[in-house]
Length: 42
Image: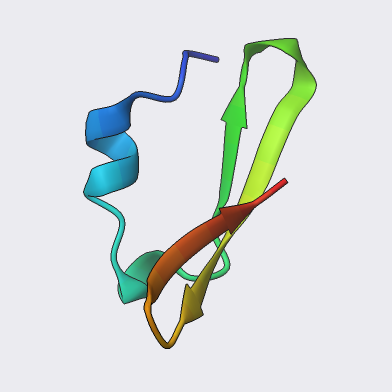
């Protein structure tokens, strides 16, 4: 697993909703769509 980059976060769209981002150290976040954009919750 690799580090999550700012570029990767900025490229997220509503099509990524439901996907889970994983990073080294067991960090994971689910992508969701909000009225003001896309968010990642850990």
